[in-house]
Length: 169
Image (cartoon, rainbow, N blue to C red):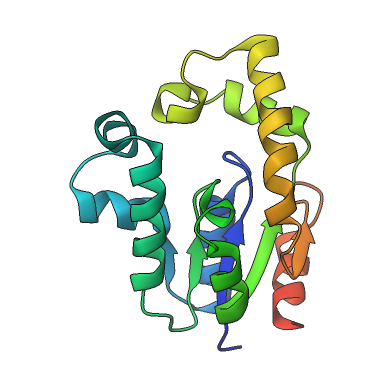
């Protein structure tokens, strides 16, 4: 399998965690788009967001995505990456796109247990507000996520089945 694999899904879906496991199992390199972006701009994503705003962040994110040399690696994208600048079209044209699909309640459980201060889009949200935000944002983003060649629940589907699905595309 030479295809680059792009992992998409909402924040907290496990793109980085699953991506590292897939890359190890397939003996492929792993690229975390967010880490790539942070090293390129020299500041954290929350800092970049507050300094330059979301529009500039999305433009930079798209630029960084397109500047990664595609060599059959596993690429974990940001939660919003597929939804801007025709990034989903770029990914579909250049590899296999895997949507790690979780329910809003599963995402809420994961995100409320994490440090939401590291996630600019969730700043100041908790409880019912956080769940509502996840439901609303996920509803908007699924239009893009659902274009993936593979849609899989990483909680209920074993890693071996995820890898098999990727290899069969």
